[in-house]
Length: 271
Image (cartoon, rainbow, N blue to C red; front, top):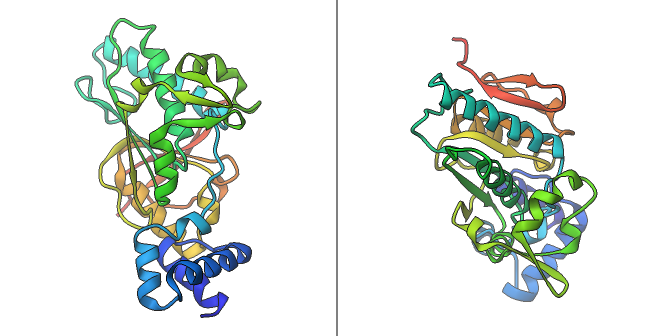
């Protein structure tokens, strides 16, 4: 099978334009582990997500692009105020409901844990903590296994996001040359394997989908945005990587911005 055919398979299953070097490594791995690369073998490794370990990027760290976490903190403040005054909340969330957040293409989990750390810290300072739940998924099963273990190297605490390190520190225990995330956070996060080319399994108030959109082909991007939009509640918010926002065009997603952050909000489509 040629590199072009493998590239087409990657686009078909994952919606991405795979790097040529990654495709060569993937081809070698197929022959070493399966003795070939026929249609049945490809279906097995793509449908199981095994191929994702070679063809997807898993760059992540805690509190990456900190303006988005400042935005979430402001959102929580507005939500708390709306609940206290018995007014409607900033979006579709009712005062009786949980705040539902999705961390899409979460890689090894740093983003999801960052979200939980911030919300836990916010809740510790208010009288009526905001109930919440985080769904976090990635197409790569091994990345999700890492997320579930919650063990991270010192590289995951970087200068970008350093203003939030005081929030992270109480939840990260240093063991030798790695950090262990506090187990209490794991009960707030549901980690699972999911392919963004398929519909999401629930509806959310906020979806974080950052620094992954750039790897999808133009045709696949439309499908991915459709799946994300469908999973947002009315008025729900989609937050994407800073470098990706210019490429977002969808009938149900209106571009919005604050002083520091750019985001999209779900609206009714005009018939």
